[in-house]
Structure formats: C-alpha cells, structure tokens
Amino acid sequence: MNQRDTFINAVRDCAALPECVRDSATSATGIETSSFDVTYLEFLDLQIGLNARGDEWSRRLRSRRSGLTEWCDIPLVGGRIAVGSDDYTIKVDPRTQAIVYWEHYAD
Image (cartoon, rainbow, N blue to C red; front, side, top):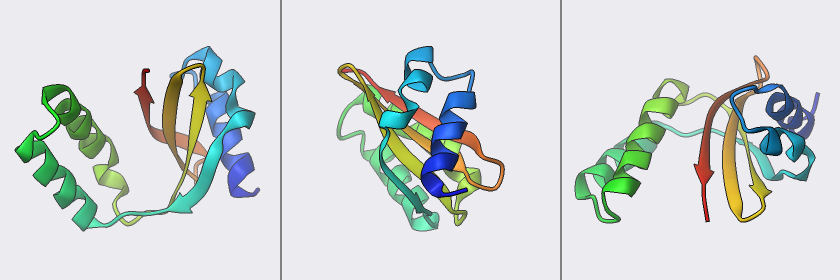
C-alpha cells in the first residue's frame, strides 16, 4: 500500500477524529513520510521554556512533545486535512496503519 492510501485509510478508520475529518480524508494534502530525531524534542523543550507565543501555544507544544516522544527516529506518514477554515495535521504509523498523533488548528 502506498503512503497516500495508508494515510487515507488510517484517517477513515480513526473514531477519535471528528466525522467531518474522516469524511474529508481523500482531500488530504502534503502527505509524506518523515521522521524526527531528539533535536526536534530539544527544540520543543526550548520553545516551551521561552513561552514566546504565549501559554496556549506552549500547551500545544507540550501536548505535541508528549504525543510524539515515543515516535522519535521512527518514520511516520504525515499529512494535512482542511475542513472549512479548520486544519488538522495527522501522523500515521505505516507499520500499524493507525494514527499516532493529530492536532486541530481552528481558524
């Protein structure tokens, strides 16, 4: 299965995502496989400590760090889905074909 199909199937099968996102799976953009290393986690720690964009953003970064830490150095398929004026960024483990992390950006 290619990375696009893996991503779309994982989104469609994830009950934790809002139905509107699952229904929009085929409109996903920017689907690619990538990984990050410990320097990304260190960067998140620095940004959280600086709190430069305020408490709400720092909370988002803490959540991201917590949600992605166990996936350090592991390739994930990521993509973005726009639903109306909202955006969702999603990470999928291609081995299990399951979503491991997602974020919602409300307009």
